[in-house]
Length: 214
Length: 275
Image 1 (cartoon, rainbow over the protein chains, first blue to last red):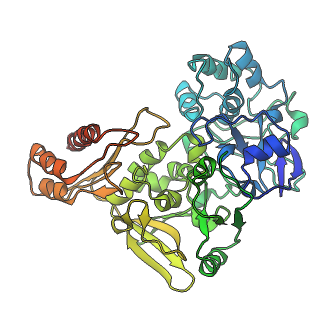
Image 2: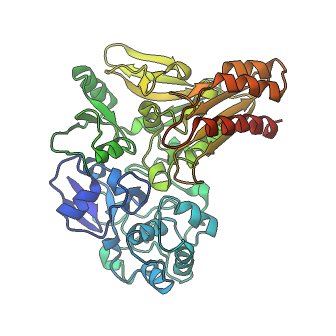
């Protein structure tokens, strides 16, 4: 089953109903994705599928065939959101942190506090009381670099380049038009982005480009 | 995870017709879509069935369109995010947008579908009172019998039991044009990420319509209370009728007494807010 995982094409051989989280942790040894509740309440296992946050504990492997999956490992270890979480002490025990960071990136650039709170409603943290997390996300968005820059999204298996998405918003992640992992550390987003408004948000999915069909 | 997957199988149709043929040929197939309920059961080892039919790639079932005279037709595979972002839904049935925003967090809204919410038949399903209060119609199809339509208020035949036959798929739900003021309220333990203790949808007009979740074995309308209000009775009198009409139960999430109090308050709030 082919998918683009953190910028690289992977051909995974596993049971089609195996949970994406177990495929990541057991078959691919990507243990950054954590299991919390196993029922879609806590968001610890949040990963991005085509740029949209989902709970990897509730996704069968078969349903990510041909999609672009981003886990915490896909950010490398020098992403502005990661630094902001460290600088603001937005992590204590750490189990919610990978999911928090991915959900935060999926919010798009410069979310309001209300958008941050709404966008993180599916991510529980039992240590920080959230304030430090909100500060971290605001801080990550103060730099010149887009928090979404160069995170690989919306690429189909077999494609050579990361496709850009012309619009985005709180639940949609936009590619900076850069290469996949190679750009994560240094990527800057030079293109002008439309302001993220709720109306520009796109629904998720493998073929979410059909705007006129809603 | 307490469920084992080695004994499970997944059929992956490429078209709706393939899916319908597969269901006709094997009545044990359980359709699955966003898996936000089904995989919770898998995780807890309480999953019913072992053979599944993956509807997720059937993009044609995600369509949200207006058919006929202002009838909003929502494909079974429309995700709650699709519904939240749809201008058509926002214009015609804004309370369905309100309801969809309160279903889980963004991760669940990105995966959960309205067809799944209907098929799962939980009495606490948050979109369901909206469908009941608007007199929605469930569109079903089978390979042999073609399409048929079932009133949403007749779709549930008991606790977690539906009128869907084993060889049928839910294709869409159709909501007739709503005249009147729409109102939706969910009461849970917290503002976000909570299963309803009581959930209500109402339409205020000359013939008021009200539907409730989590107060009975299925999502219910309250025709006697509606009739009382339609005939011009006061809200106090209507609430007395209402308190005899619903029979909430004690369970892990709440008590019958609490639910009765909250549900009655919701009726009053609905009536005051839409006056």
